Image (cartoon, rainbow, N blue to C red):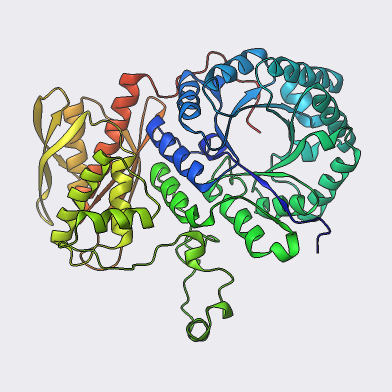
Length: 525
């Protein structure tokens, strides 16, 4: 058992920065705002909103989030360069509690081959960047990229120097997921014992999951004195991902007897946060994913089922309710009123605008006419689709498909442009979906590449809503789309139009990530 007194561990969430960097996980600014609001409600201590210097679009999204989020620290990632810190300062100007997060590599392989800098030069640049950032911000975090593969004494030297220069948090990342839990914990203990002035700063860890040990390493670090854990919802991130927020939080919560530590996270918001990130990125978690996977609280073996029926604690070390997995308390159907529906939204953890409520309630009524009972998952699907939507450049008017084993497939679709002009096209394809998507492309005058097409059922049964996720690409940019309907073809059309509208809105508003002003000479932490 750890000898540490029970203490609070800070949760630094980097879903919007490191998480979004993972392939296929890009989000538009409205989706980022929706995730940011959910993270704030979840109770994260620090929210890393992006990498402001990486593009004008990222700078703008960080600025927008910083101006809205008030109940937690908002951080922007910067290289140890004045121009990056200037971009960070600009993007965080409206934050209630801004943090400039500066990183610089300290491992021999990174210093020699990537930075082409000597250790002395790295130390000097690290200190200078902290001093420069302190002119604008009192909350400064410094990360020694690839710290675990660095010389421990050099890391202690760098940490001591940046703390003396004004850093308030120092971060020890296992950037490539190389460490084993025992040695990572020992390394954190060494840093705590040998860094000059460490008592003046928080010690953070940022673990990647290349060997599947990110959470285990983070917990080992906490057991050995780390004050902050950096993580993402669903563990998304570069390569194999980051440490999973929900796993760290619930491990600390369930095993407080062993780790003697806890967080301020509202665990009942975990499930809703996980589902939202899944919806906006289009990246699903595997069924057996700890805490939030579909099977996390499922019991199929007879002996397990019997045990749970007698006493849930026989096979459940936490309850579904503890992470916010909803349970039906009343049946919602076509006769349900607005108040009951709004109460259910609140029970599910959603706070929506009056306009969104009107839209979702109308869609609920339409769905209730098709289904006898509308489940919580159905409602969740409706509100997700409405709340994270971008403005509709193209709106579906009507569609039809003619298909059969000997007929091929012909799709007919009519779309209305936001300027009021409608256009109808007919196209043939290898199947009904291909025919409809081809017809849409004819109306657009563009042919984005369909990178992903995935369809599933929101709930069980023949009246279940079909949930379709698509990813499209054009000129090196990528967009996600999602659609829900009791008709799988209609859900496919809605998903494709959702992605198309995201693309059109990005291109028109200039909010998409544009090419960097110059190539970055460092990767993220």
